[in-house]
Length: 363
View (cartoon, rainbow, N blue to C red):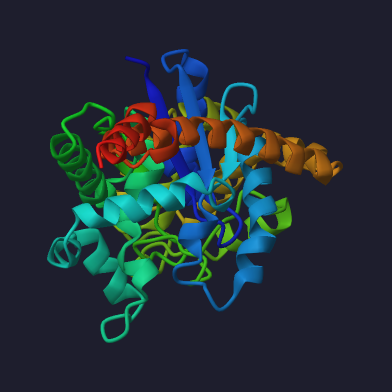
């Protein structure tokens, strides 16, 4: 069986460093590993519209931002198919058929759906499109017969929902058309969710606590130097806490021993810096200056690649079009198999047509 990846992002804004450590960096590694036969990376605009239906321009404008972020981090359109979800209309038809395999009560029990509904204050008025997005996600995954879906732990219930749909379909129609995907979660727990610069648990566009991949050096400096640390670490001599300290969480995610040799030779590694901070005598500013250098070093090649792609935006749309054409061809093949299994391929079933003719000949 071919090894196939399906992953993607909602185009609700520019991508930030939380996306980078949580998924983008890993995608590039998987892309370049040679372990996978096909990689499909989706800009999930249709899914984003489920809770942005009254502001389609937000989605329309951010598709190119997400595409530029993809290309700037090193996703290669010759190795990964980058495509726009809504342009693959086969996904909508698959969603319609799968909806018959899932009950309302099962959707209501999905922990991810429950959490998202609460976060968006949809308790009393849930748009049907949003409520059923686990079914749409199953359509996305199965259309490309993805064997692997990189996700965070909070998305595991969504993958299990897809696996249930696959089993129900294959059992109902006595076939092996659909493939059960496996989840690929981050190996490093730090990468599962990078906190915001304000110390909040999640980096979020709506909270305004993001460092974007496209931020300038000046913007990064402003954000890092104002980053949340330890509110009890008032004097340099005070012992400090690294737990819940956003600066050290970011250093955990990005700093290497080579960075210390280059930017902060007073310490051999991060463990030595942490130990000094915890016993007292190390100020927040020195830690932040190290982090600033580390982040700008990480973002420098990303900024450079983005600047090149920004010079030819029509070429970026052409990349998306080519990727979408490949995605449509793949999804169409799966849809054909699905309709054959469901025996609703009326015009392609010559035996059906002949049988009906013979039935009426007997009258």
